[in-house]
Length: 331
Image (cartoon, rainbow, N blue to C red):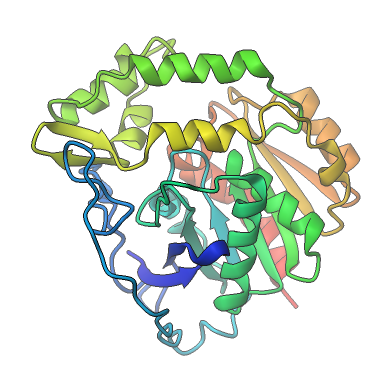
């Protein structure tokens, strides 16, 4: 459960954020469109949402709306901004966030091109745009100095923002993101992978089955992976399709896979926790080198977890992250 917040990012792009802060009964207010059972999310109508066949749904321009005030007690709580990875959305954090007990104001952002946020046809989907969006959200929601928690691409956005705007960032959690360059071969592999998707999928069961078992990238059956991708599918008359544009995802990835990011990592001056899944994409040696490069780095790993560590192992993830959050957020 989460309360929807409409915010404005760089270049006026419309973004959707979700306030996951627990209320008196331990639950947030409102509802995220991503159902926990993987029924998929329904995009909001607008120029970022295409009708079947690719024709855009027109929507008149609207003036920025004033955000409703945060419920009493939330505005003064230490801010935490969650940034998902490529193809993800803010709802993917919900299983892990529900297990956090501290008095934090926790907001998850649907980044541009993802979830319920705008998907501008012309972009941009650059590193600069993603970082500027995150900064705008921190400032508009009054979250600063904020603790940034990022997964994969969202972790890179988080540490680049921490390096560029230390005034906005109190602390940082990096979840399974490499600082080394992945290279052109990696980008070509992703292009080929997207082409193999048998979309549109005839049913959500087919989505679960393909991403959890039939996908050539899956070495052993992984139902949690199938559930993860089912949450970013929407139903159309011809079947189930991703709510994002795969070409926009490739464009986003193109802007960071060819370069190493050690320099920006070394510029992060706030306390930082590097978390990896034991079977994730970030190897132990590289993770420990990242901790060494960080002026105030710490390390944690989650046994049996892969790349989607916060989604597949939310309890273990929370146990690893919460002591760090409480340490940096407690006055």
